[in-house]
Amino acid sequence: MTVFFFLTMLAILVVIDGIIERRKAKRVGQHSLQRSPAGSFEFRLPADVALATNHTWLRKSPDGTVTVGFDEFLGNLIGAPERVSLPFRGNLITTTDGHFQLYDGDRRLEFVSPVAGQVVEVNVAAEANPSLITQDPYGRGWLFRVRPMSTGDLRHPPMTGETAVRWLKRQARLAVEFLSLRQVPAAVVTMYDGGEPRKGVLRQFDAEVWREFQDKFIGRFGEERKGGEE
Image (cartoon, rainbow, N blue to C red; front, side, top):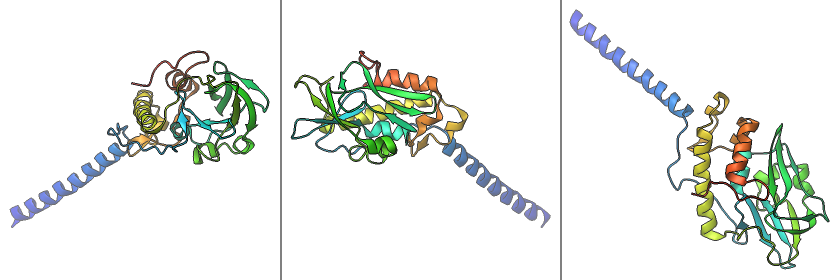
């Protein structure tokens, strides 16, 4: 009887220990950085929108003007920026100089326009409420409108349709790899949601990582973006 009682208690202890270990493993898994399987990143690109390689987009209007904004990939990584700085109406902008910026504290990303010309309208609503850039990047979150000087005033041939969506998915996978190599304790539990970059994850990192992100995914002024398209 004593032996039977001992074996029963031992079995119960083994079961309890197994439950505890499984819960520990589950918590560790939740806090670990997991690479998302290929094809799990979802992007919805409007049919009338084209993408540039510095994560800006263009939309041509019947009146000949071109609307410019930030793509969904960029909005997801930054979340709601503290401030956006846009060119003034009437400014002449080129495709080689930085004309607009996103700010979060002492960190910033600076962009060249994907199209050269004269700024004819600026989205003051996005300036006043930068969260629109994330909430509705291809709609209310547009940045400014340009009247191109000529049909050859695009910085690069824009990407459209499935080509653009495939490129965004590649960029998202590369962003996972890029950020996972630059972990900081505050970001470990907030970096991914189901393996994908969680909205605003770039804000968990310091200005040095932002500068590296600029080089790899956006590019410097007058230069081709250094990488990130493989």
